[in-house]
Length: 257
Image 1 (spheres, rainbow, N blue to C red):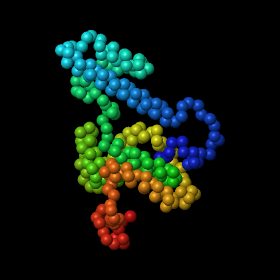
Image 2 (cartoon, rainbow, N blue to C red):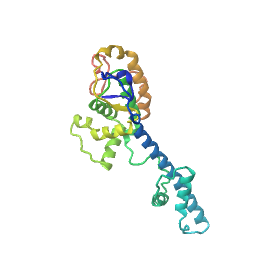
Image 3 (cartoon, rainbow, N blue to C red):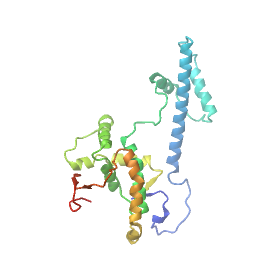
Image 4 (spheres, one colour):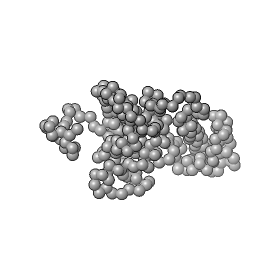
């Protein structure tokens, strides 16, 4: 089940509490992300400075830089930033300068789902607050529902065709499986500092207390703005009734949901 990291109010463990050694849960992954960001920022800095040196040298009619110039620049910036333990290969900087790809904001191939993952995380956390945590299957269904029939889904299809594999959907059930276990595993790695998967727990006794109108309003109000910004949803000037196929109806008796 998905729950908020270190959310003690949802724990139903009956074993006696005791202190555990080691680092706090999630701190290792967090430190890895911070270290990777620092290394990438350093590479960005060196790439920009190296490109400036090349440009200046070419203006002065110098075709080739002196031997060791790039290595000296790398070592100098590593020492200045107190990051001598970081290994940045000169070929990485040369490749960036040659391609004029000096500043890289994120390493690796970015998934189109990054645009809406903050909203997905917010929904999962709010559901956990309400003692209604979702399991992996329900969370995947939520992600698929958020993207079905909009630009994000089209971008996901294009991304899968280019970087992964894609099978044309033959019916709606195939469409709802657009995002599968592979995406879920990557989602957990990217957001492991915000949510954590735990053993399933029962909250039937507290359900009436937590499942309130106010909680649901907070949950939806907290994500509507982000969904609209990510073009997953569109705010209407007037409320609209829809049937189960998404078509507009004018009778609340025919409306779905």
